[in-house]
Amino acid sequence: MDLVPALPETALPQPPQPDALIPLATTGLRRAGSELPPVCLQLSSSTLIGLRVYLEEFTRQLAQRTPSAATVATYRKRGRSFVAWLEQGRDSRLRRLDRACVDAYRAYLDQRFPNPRTKNGYLTAVRHFLTFLARYHPGLVNAAEFVKGWSCSRTHTRRHLPVEDAKALLAALAFDPRKTDLQRARNVAMAYLMLKTGLRTIEVSRARLEHLQELVPGVKWRLWVHGKGRGSADESVQVLREVYERIQAYLALRSGPLKGSDPLFATTACYDRGGNVVTAAGKRLSTRAIYRIITEGLLLAGVKKPGIVVHSLRHSTPTFALLNDANPTRVQKMMRHQHYATTEIYVEEVQRLLEGAEDAVTQI
Image (tube, rainbow, N blue to C red; front, side, top):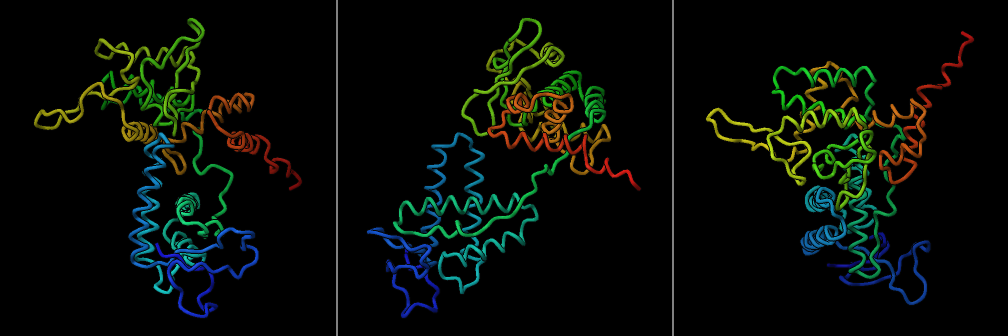
């Protein structure tokens, strides 16, 4: 790739030469000692081709460190979006991958995506990719480090289900006339488990029969969870009797014999009009199938409102627990939050719900 000094073009005494390393004029970024001075990439045609090669290597190495294929796919998608913008979307006057170039990409993201979290995700992918490039180009400036992202609200964009709406969802799934007895039992057990333990759709999809183990005889069970971004089922949630009984009622309707490696929630056979099997029975439910089942239940129950989505079931779990005075640390463990700050958002939302300062405005 072509490297040029990260100086304004007007300040250069002559056209930049490839591989020329000239110290930056900005003293705040000047490096001391014998280190190479910072440089940036010249956006020539060969550099743009090379960026795609480096992007594939970046995602390949990321896949070795990150067990989640979805994470790797997300970085690949966002990295390709950046390279495609460099090739086709940027102003032709932007000839180097410097701060001005990344600022322009930020402006492009600002126009393309309405959600600040989505925009930050794309910008974060660029930061990580340029950090990776710097390992192979000594002195390369990661211009994205100097570009600020978007401020995001500390509150959740998705709402939790009120208790009555959660009950209505379970009732709608239990009496859905379009489904078979097996499908109704599966859908109710699955939604009940999600509401009581806060499982994500990917965690429900990965659950196997062998993951459900007795913890306290006849009282509590443990479900080992293959969590988001993790390589195995190394976390767990407690399953109470009422949830366990619904799961067992569903499993009793499954055609056997069942093995421990079988999915906890499985597909039912689906045929086209010609009688051909479209979906075989006994396969793992996909996250898309789970999303569709819960969304249909929300619509059927009449509780599908703005902000109420499938992920609202996960938001409901810690909210219900905190409303019943559960210890926040225990809630953090149940939800498997890596940082307490994530749990604290739920604590603040519940406190706001119960003790809003507006309640004290009684003079008028």
